[in-house]
Image (cartoon, rainbow, N blue to C red; front, side, top):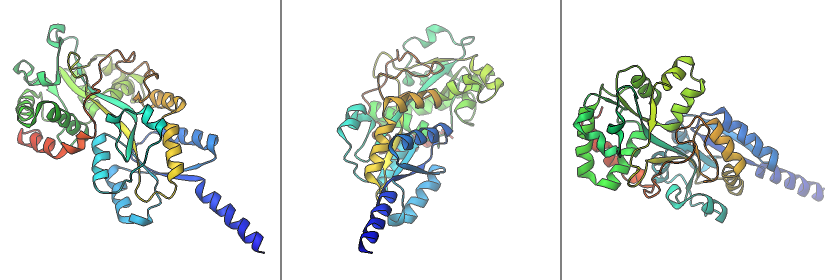
Length: 337
């Protein structure tokens, strides 16, 4: 009888440990396919709770020690930093393998980047001269020559907040406020819509320049958002700013280790898998992000598919959260709605 009890406990222990629980704010069916691959290779079952960031964070905080989550996955270092500041992530003691693959500017002690994205400029080749684009920086969008020609999302958008945070880090608060005020003066319309809406506005002739993340443009070109958006995307061209100095603004999708993770070792194994060549190739060809691994080429639809542009590998993305409140303050002071 005693042997049966011991055997039962052993089986239960193994079945419980052979899983990992993800709270994910990413909404890609391709991520689920990736988790299935991980399960086939390791035998570790992946349970996923999906939702938006606010809802997931609220649940994790309310459940506290009762939360069974192991990994929190979301986009933007600003979001990861914000959640880390609430004390809901733990020191991960990342393996040497993870540290080797992910530069220190793309990870913290409790979260790590699994893919990269750039926030770049899109322009109308019919209305923007190449001479206007020569050596163009984000900072140059304050030039009066762009008055009434720029579209961008609202100030409450995390991607914009992280961009402004990086400008604060590189140029200081005062200069960034001046820049933001001039950018608002150059807007073709009051900010509205998502990133794809900005590209559509340029294609429709409502503006000459748009600011948007790279994967949205590729998504439009793929036809997954309909023929109309595919045609519109072909009417604009991508441009990578700041090529003669620090490089184009970069951000991440990342995974954080939750504070009360009951399956920490399995969580680390999954994150290591997400940083494998197999998983990185899957990510770039399904979400149109850039791989965290330097030897993996982007999908052919992604701007900079040959990785021939200079990335900002100097600005630590952890600073996007550190500067976030100041960034939002500056945007609101500038009249950025």
